[in-house]
Amino acid sequence: MAGNASYETSWADQWDYNKDPVVYHNNGGGGGSNSTDKYKQKLGEGLGKTKQVASTGFKKVKEGTSVGFQWIKDKYQKTTQKR
Image (cartoon, rainbow, N blue to C red):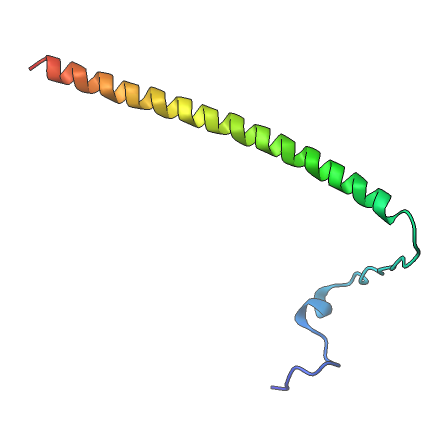
């Protein structure tokens, strides 16, 4: 079996019929900080939403656990009162 030389195609290249996307680098100045600020703002909003959803989920788990333990406690008390 031949070694993996740089001129050989990989398995993915053999079966991928689509061309690789062309990447354009914009080395021009200006406007970079403005677009960065937009991304930071969107990221901050997304993290705020994620934190809120996680907090709500935690409250639901806490409440469900509390109800579950209360149910077990009630069942145990019912069985001990019969004796």
